[in-house]
Image (cartoon, rainbow, N blue to C red):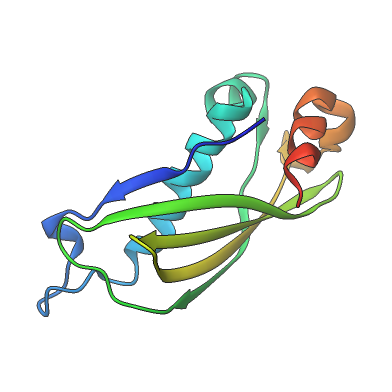
Length: 135
């Protein structure tokens, strides 16, 4: 399955006094792209949470390459860099045009009733769809 790239247009309020996108916003951009990616897989947050499973953030890492500014269209490519039955690490490559502006990753676990849940057993189709996305 070919996944489409998520686009975020930088809003004025996301910029600091120097006109540069504030670094704190990139975590939100990652979340937007991750939600879009999960929707494309057919296992959006609404579906998983309705079935009692959540995927909180365990770790996040960002590497800024170039600044972005108001109205820049940031194209965010999502990829799975690691997948186990209990957690997933997602990579993000953010570009404006051909220029990489940020690379990042986030690691999430899967919980049901505040306890770790084996996603491979709980949602085997979702697990297979994710594994199909690994490089």
